[in-house]
Image 1: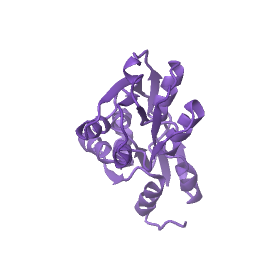
Image 2 (image 1 turned 90 degrees about the horizontal axis):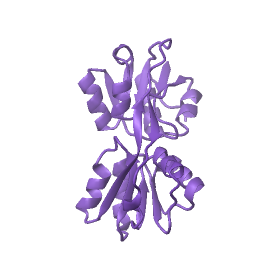
Image 3 (image 1 turned 45 degrees about the vertical axis):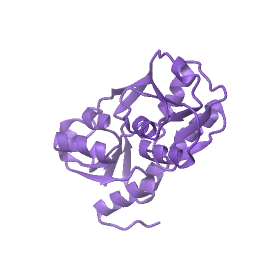
Length: 225
């Protein structure tokens, strides 16, 4: 069984190794890439918290030459945490899952004080900002990078299974691949995009253990670990 992993760099670390340990053939085929924008970061400077939902946002602030000056840092998942710590130092809040919903829940569970800054991409979902604003926080969002599609390699055939982590990846997937392969959607918004394109799919939670279990279930075998 061949599995194509299309998620961006830094997401779902350890998944490829876990799949290969189960005897699956894994292809890395990123369908999106990010580019830093020349953004006005002044709205973030007096925020008590900076919350990061991607490694790309961390990289963008580095490239823009901006560092936290007393801000508390929050990250979605371990990969973003490691990128933040390498770039800026200790991280005070880490969401257990790589989703904006998980980061919102982790933040609101602590009920910290202060304005919240969100350096993010041009396709960022509004869920984190909305959840915090509904809880009474002042939120300042700044787009610091943009997401662009990457083409599927023309010589690469359709795999048995394609993992898709965002709607933008779904729209970058060629119809010829999406109609031949079975798609694994990480979360409901990705599943909705697959439904709109008419591609057969299954939904899984966006964490390596759940993804591994879903793939092995599709293969009809139990997980050996």
